[in-house]
Length: 151
Image (cartoon, rainbow, N blue to C red; front, side, top):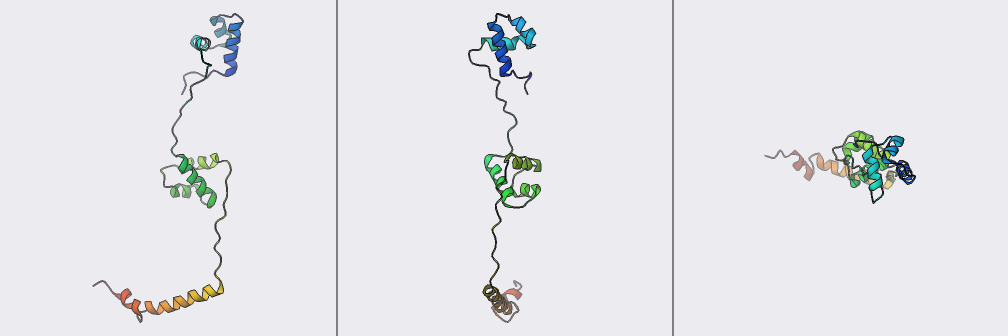
């Protein structure tokens, strides 16, 4: 966290303008109520004054996990807690919620539809089940396998 407030571009231009008008450093600091060292740094710098970029705290998630969260949240109707569990990351649900809000808009994909079985498929599945039920009851080859206790 910075020790003092940042100097805006407007204030910097005021300092330079007052110096061009012939004001001393003491007069400038009284007019703008800024520290003597800040005014000195603005006036003696060869490069234009820019505040240091603040690094801040590092993100828990990387770009790849952000995309995974976006994909899960847009393609499936899941709660934030379910998305947190599905992402396999040690992140809080508020982090997931922030990532979803950061995306701005959601690309909602439709869930892939499963076509209903045709009458032919239904009858074939029933026939297969009936054939294999007799195997499980002990009359067929499966009966010996299923009843075998491993001794």
